[in-house]
Image (cartoon, rainbow, N blue to C red; front, top):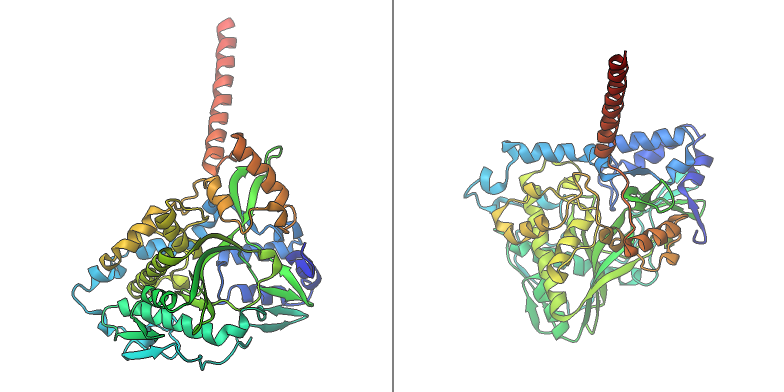
Length: 470
């Protein structure tokens, strides 16, 4: 365990006796509009409540510990209904020929943050002078829940001082992305005498004006709760059954769900900022600031780093993906959680771009329903999303994706109790070809049916022989 860290079970063991406190914690996890990569549905909330009230502390620390096949039905039903409902088909099918110019800034506030910029106003934005936006604050990010429990993280000592520049850059990149939205008023961004009308052109302009730009494919353990208890970080991963057997045991390998995002680090004479991009539980596929302090146990790894032309290409694809998600939101506003899960989770967009740039994808799980990505204006993104493996039907994920999602290649750096040793022996089995899968529920049911049938057949043979002998 990292210093100054406690398990969720320890916090809940001490607080579960307090009247109403369990429900207060669960209400925090189930709040609409929450940010982050984890998803709570009524079924999962009910399960966590049962574990806490039943004082199953081991179960709390391995929550939920289900396969994707078990998790999927709790969150995919709405997506399937919307996908099949002709009343909410794609924009092109429902409103052929209707211009997108009817889309307003107010309509998109729920799906993308533009700061002070708007879709209706054409303007020239200069990055030559320092940002006038306010600095970092925890207002709206950190809340006191009582009994020593705090939800939300404070400032990252390195990145928070750049918040004003980072926030401006995130807003500008989001607005430039929406230049690609039909009917949007054009916005131009200038820096050091160079101009840009797309996100990728801005990155190229920054590099051409003496800025160092690195785009990283970053992976972390998803922090499920962002809780702090009596000054300690609370370790709260979201566990998924990988359907891989831990050698020498009958246990499946449980792995914490990871969070993936693209991160831009920009240093130079005019702009010094760090921003990220991912599709979050808030329903927004957008550029964001990244200046809060991660808890140590989530770790962090750059699976890939892109520079020069590759950095420009990642930015281009991210901009087009932002537009694709806007089209999806406008076509299917009925999707719960802003479409999070049926339109993918944080991993899907990153995996799709990783596959385009490297030829392989190494993230798990991916949940996007490819049938929903049917808008002809987003043909390139549609194909990228459809090309990556899907975990919606509960198939056994490839070990390369299980290990590729981890935020560390040195398993000894992982501080979640028991996980490092499991990963070590499973990885060794994968490398030497002795890896075994745990049986799926279909296989279990099939084996039970076959077993019952075999017993019945054997009993019939025995009875027949007895009668024959008589």
